[in-house]
Length: 150
Image (cartoon, rainbow, N blue to C red):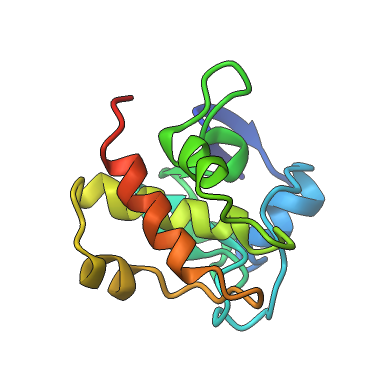
C-alpha cells in the first residue's frame, strides 16, 4: 500500500485493516507515535490525516491511503522546530513525556483550524490524556505557539 507520510511517498506492506499505529511503528519504523490504551481513548497515538488529529490505534491504514499523514517526526526539524515544539519547551510541558507526541499533533491540528484559540477552544480540542496532569502548561504552550510566526 502506498502512503504519504510526512511529505514522502512510502510503500507499506500491510493489510488494509491493520491499525495505522502499527504500520507507522512496526512497518515504517516511525516510533515517535506511541501506543497508549489501544482503544482510542488516551490520544498518545494521535497523528494527523489531512490535517485532522486521529487516533492511529483505531484507524485502519486503509483510511490513510491517498491522504497526507503527519507524524511527530514530520512536525518540525532540529534546525527548524515547529512553534508548538518551542512553546512546549518554554512552558516546560513534558513531565514523563509519553503522551507528548500525541498532544503536539492534536495541538497542531487545533492551531491549523483555529489560529487564536480561547481556553474553551483548547479544552474542547485537547481530549488527550496526560497522566502527569500538565493540562495548564499545555494550554499555556498552545497560547504561546499561537503568538509565534512560522
